[in-house]
Amino acid sequence: MKKLIVLFSFLVVLTSCKNEVKTQPEKESTPVISETEYLSFTDKDDQFTGGIKMIPIETPKGTFNVWTKQTGNNPTIKVLLLHGGPGMTHEIYECFDGYFPQEGIEYYYYDQLGSYYSDQPDDKSLWKTERFVEEVEQVRKALGLNSDNFYLFGQSWGGILAMEYALKYQENLKGLIVSNMVPSIPDYMKYNEEVLAPQLDSTVLKKIMQYEAAEDYENEEYLKLITENYYPKHVIRMPIEQWPNSLNRGFKHVNPDVYVTMQGPSEFGIKGDATLKDWEVKDRVHEINVPTLSIGAKYDTMNPEEMKWLANNVKNGRFHLCPNGSHLSQYDDQEVFFEGLIQFIKDVDSGNFKKG
Image (cartoon, rainbow, N blue to C red; front, side, top):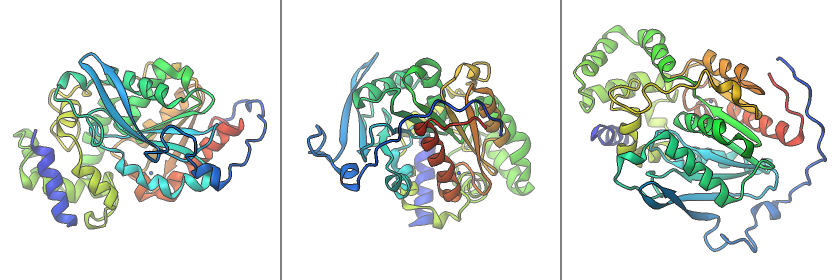
């Protein structure tokens, strides 16, 4: 359980991502939103806090509060950001500030229960995918999001949560974005073991596997091998000392109890008795008919072909590849990442979305 704390401390020391269908009916042009209107909180119930809301969430273990923060105002485009981890924070999406405001996109930062600014109950029974789905639904209602405006963005674990939400509540969605996530953890593990691992230096891989076999996940040499050899190739393709401050803060604030319970103790895949170890929805994604964007990256920990498969197997999917990106392609292939994401949102909003 201490493994992540050791990892984050280690990182801090080192540092001190076409087939066509019939076009949907054209909608009336969306009114232009002025900068003043976009930035204004006048007469809103969260003006006092600058867009921050602590939303009460009902769970089987009582009521807890989760943190959200709104940026911008747009009646037809409201994007809720689901972070990864599990147990990560909203901080690694702060780069969205560099792209969404100038496009007039309204968006919400959100720390899931157990994460950073939200309540952090000490109860492992809460860290279940099904409960997180119900949490997202309660957040949606509290923020007043609906099928006229609600875009759900999820990356990594957030992508799992977004897919599960869509499979239960897609009638509430206007658009779905699954970023850097495949619909099967077993497939992810197979790709990691059979494709990515052999690409590492053989000596490095041998040492990593020795630590994995011994389940010595907190060993500093193991952590150093992972962060200096695996992370810069497949998590964020930058030298560690160049990682953005928002990412370093996000790592620092991860909740290890949530992470280890659902992801497991290994930094080289999902191992042990992690609750996500056998997760997959490949046989159900055809049920998703809301416009869907799947974002993949060439160097991701996930197979980009499987992310393309996801786009081709939902009813109305589009695939967007970040050719220079990895798992956090919003940083290491940023312009391409945001170009595809923003175009998807605008196409759905205008009624011009095409599958592809």
